[in-house]
Length: 528
Image (tube, rainbow, N blue to C red; front, top):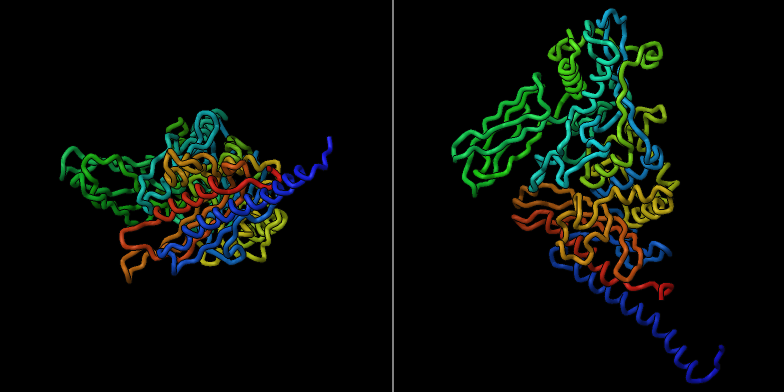
């Protein structure tokens, strides 16, 4: 029924006026609360960049320096993982074969076994019984670089090698008279950025690390107990760590003193939980070869070759495997599982490997070629790649700089894809898991409502004996209390932290910004 009563028209006119006014006031409240955070005196020498947009309309809700370049730290991994997901697909699996070269006579291989590395980042070392990749919120790759307590996954770091060795025995091989070789020529070895192991090669076992687990004795002054993972007979770790007072801080140091030789010294507090320290491997190919030889022997395959001696035979030509016999093949869990580990724990080694995997998939070999391919994929997603600069897959490179707008463009481009649910589920969840697990309290209204990638990069200001926070960042998606879906990117650069303060303070501050966005983002006019 239509009415033209003057009072009805007046009420309708007033209502139409008040709706945008109420929305404007709510937006003003959001602006004021954000400004209270970013205008704090601690940041008078720093730079903030923020962009928050409505996921449905693309319209900005809040922006500040949205088109300026910022060091992103590990938010870079959003770009890398997005490109890999587009290029490879969520169901992509790495397949690592082993070939035999030579005749098999009565169970004896009169020749060589050759494992051809295909770039599988985990090679079974994180797989559980259900084929999922397992992670801890504080990954062991950060053991020497973090104030938190890294943990080891309850998995077998040699699972992939063990599976291959069992298949080799089932193929009829009981003895190998020749060599055991690792073919790691898939791409050109490179160096990654960020904390943890730096050498990027197609062969990775236990993240190319030796884990040393140190537990205190029963009294001050007693020698600590030590376990090494994965166990092996060719790496040497000299550990002399004593038990110190329960109120003292651990002082365990790791020193590389020769190829495969490590010295650990210091103290561990009485009553402390076991602490993990890592020994990065300088020669991943030799490390994998030695572990493979020992695994073959444990699985009932006698190997004449020694893990302590370099091989005396050469590899076949890379196109020469067609004439050899495949005796084993290990298949990884899908890429969707790997992305969860990379993004949730911010795994630098795996992220650094992805551009090289893109290169190898396109018959190329170098990091530069892989990054160029990544750039083409990002442009197709709608990212203005000319407005950013990237040289690494993990973040932390001196060239790595992005804008809040480009980062939002990336997330918007991924949101248009059918596999966006895979991408989002790989992100840390605010207050729940990964690098966002302790950013807000359990009673936070935004807990479990935000999916976002963190980034942190610090240097040591030796002049003032303090930490210089080069970057703290966060980018992702959320659904606000009002029901409005948001895409956001927040960057904070150049913060001289007070002595004794670490980047955890700024991490919690970004968590507070998420709470503000969650609680105070107004409904859209269309929702009203």
